[in-house]
Image (cartoon, rainbow, N blue to C red):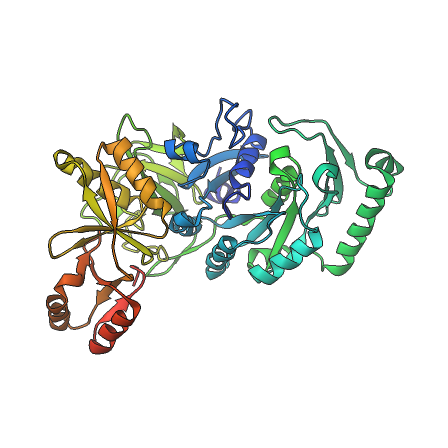
Length: 526
C-alpha cells in the first residue's frame, strides 16, 4: 500500500467523559466489534474472571476507575482504528488533556440519567481549543433517564455546540427496544446481550412496514415514526464538513453494556471521522503525507511490566513512515536514537512491529532519554507545539519514612513524574521535595505505586501554597537578583526550570507588582 492509502485507512480518536458515564464499557464494546476481544468483562463485577481489558493497573482494578490513558489498536471493516481510553476522574485531567493533543477526533460519552456534567464541559473546552471533531454517545438508555429531546438541548446549551441526532432510541429503561439509524435510514432490533455479540438482528428499510408494529408494539412504532418526522423536519441535513470543522456534533443513543446502538455509531464513525490531520510545529505545519517521518511523545508509562521495570514512551506519528531500528533525530537530545523494540498495544498486551504510519500510536522502550513533549524527526530540528503542563492546585511535601530506601524513592519519584502523573518541585533551600497535583486522588496513586513498584514508603504533609509559577526575565541580572532575594520560595521543576512558589493570591499579586520585569507563567509551555 502507498503512504496515502495507509493514511486514508486510519482513524485515531479518544473516548472522553465524566467518571461513571460508561466510557470504559464502551471501549470494551468497540474492541468486541473489532474482534480484538471475545467477551467483555463487566467493569465492576467480581464474579467475572476477565476484568476489563483497558483497566489493567493494580490500583485500577481495586478502585474500578481508570487512572491512566490506555491505547488500543484494532481493525474494523478494513479501517485501522487507534483508540485511546482516557481517565474520566478530574484528578487525572492532565493526562486526558495531553492525550487530546495526540488524536484527530473524539467520542464523548454522556450518561442519559445525569446529563452533561462539569468535567465534560472542561473536556469540551480543550476540544474546542483545537476544533477537534466530536461525536456524542448518550449512554445507559437501559435505565430510566431523561427525555432525549431535553438531553439534546442540554448538550447544545452547556457544551456550546450544535447537535444533529444520527440515531434515535425506541423507548427507555425496561421498555428500551433498540435504536433507529437516521444516517443509514435503517432500524436494527437486537436481543440485548451483555457479554457476546449476537447476530440476531432484524433490519427494517421502511418504517411503514406493518411487521414493525407486531415486533415493538403499535404505540412504540407510531412514536418512532413521529420522532423521525420531527427530527428530519427540525434539524438540517447532516453536513460532514461542519462536523469535521468542529461546528456540529452528531449524536448517537444507546446502551454500551447491552450492545445497543454501539454498532450504528461505529459504522457511521468509520465513514465520517477524519483521517490523520496536519500538526503545528514551532517552524511550520507538518502534513501527514510528507515522506519524512516525524512524531511526538505525549505520554510515558513506567513499569508497564512490573517484572522488567521498563519504561514506555507513547509516540504519535505525524508524518512519513516510522521504521524499527532506524536512527531518528531526537530534537532536544544530544544524539540520534534508534528503537529496536517498537510495539503497538492492545491495552497491556503488546506486539512488536516493524513499521507504522501517520495516525498510529506506537510504544518505544526507553531507558530515560525521552520526556513528554519530545519530538523525533528524520533530520529536521522542529518541535511539535501544544503539550502543556499546568500549575498544580494541591501541594504536599514528600516525607521519606525509610532512610534506607532513599535511592529507590528518588528513582520512583523521577520516573512517576516523567510519566506526568504529577509535578515535582525541589526547593533550592534545604532541598525539600514538594509534589503538586490537580486532585487529591493522585497522592494516593503515587503513594501506592511507590510502595508497590519501588518499595519506597512515603507520607505527604500538607503545605500552604497557592500556585507554582514558572518565571522568566529578559535581563539575566534582574532574574538572578530576584532569585537571590526570594530564595526561600524558589524551587526547580523536573526539567530544572525555575519556579516561584507563591503562598497566597494576594502575596503573589504584590510580588508581581514589586518586580514588573519578571514574567510569571501558569503553564510550563511559554
